[in-house]
Length: 160
Image (cartoon, rainbow, N blue to C red; front, side, top):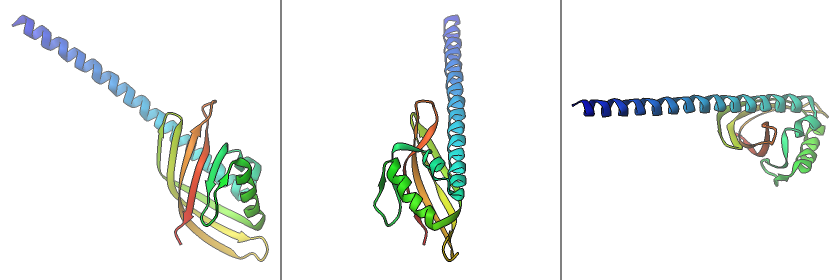
């Protein structure tokens, strides 16, 4: 009877230790997920701020060098310089009031994604006509060697 109790006690200790390890790992993963979400939310805040102010240089700095933007009704912009060129042309024609809302963020190793919605008011610089646009996006982020995140792939379209 003593042997059986000792074995049972030992198994309970092992099970408790495993549960503590798993709980600690789960907490660490949760903290990492929160860090990634905070980083991506900050990227979107900067993205909106730079785009709204027409600051193309800081806006394009949020992208990887080999990033790809896939806008609706247009061929993809391949690489940071094509992304800059396309968006600079848009910013020359319009001022923006853009806001972005994440509905979902996920991450694994060096990759993360965000899915959500956006709302924008575009005002034509010539003529001042205003257009409201709301839509959705799916964006893939890539972790950089310094631990920061950058936009790597981005696709979006309006709900109209």
